[in-house]
Length: 273
Image 1 (tube, helix red, strand yellow):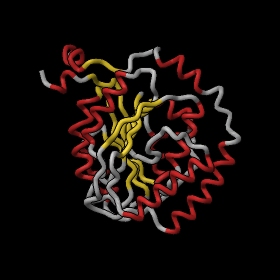
Image 2: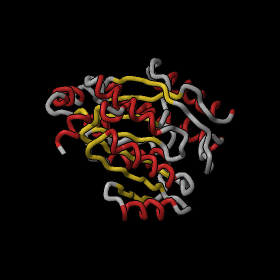
Image 3: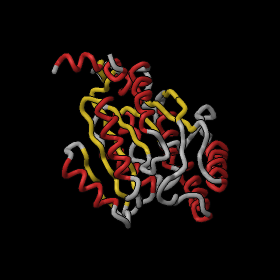
Image 4: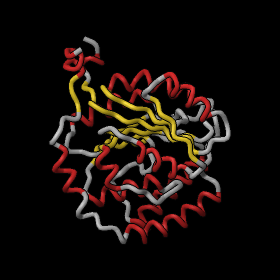
């Protein structure tokens, strides 16, 4: 029996990719997603969030969507990375949600392991990736380390979360919807999301993922303008989070987690058809 048949499948999985000027990466990403996602979920959707790209990202996404019913495209005016992630979270419909960036700096094959961890840890709402080694230039690494320090110093971000902004996460949809909407439009979107989730009481498993250099395209983060934006966002986020009452949200989800089956074994699925 193959490894795939021995692997448990999720009943439902929504996948979304935030995109900005990813015309060179997008075809490779979609083809890889179409290879892997049907092996880890029975019902699935793939959502391309086009954040006002100026290249052929939207055109390529719509060409795939015309041929493959599971692919959906959301076009929006440029709102920044956080706006694209927020749009993706709002668009998903299935019980589990996975997202990663469209720049091919992560290996989608790692999703097999994330699904296994979700199945093995039914009391956890989040499977969080952390980059074992960050594959980026000095400026980006310095920017990321500075953000990590500020997040913890100003916002009291949990010290046990290893990689705040790693864009490789598998999440329960009910948990995601309970912490929306997110106010961050830029680089602090992951910080805000995780802070809201952890303060509400949701739990997580962390696992290392490989990280690769960009093959195509140009990163849009890490300049002086981004640093100034982050400082302003940090102050706004601190005061906004002080006003949120998390106590009433989480218990309702905990009560519903066991109310339905999130996954079946692939062998059981194949025996039905």
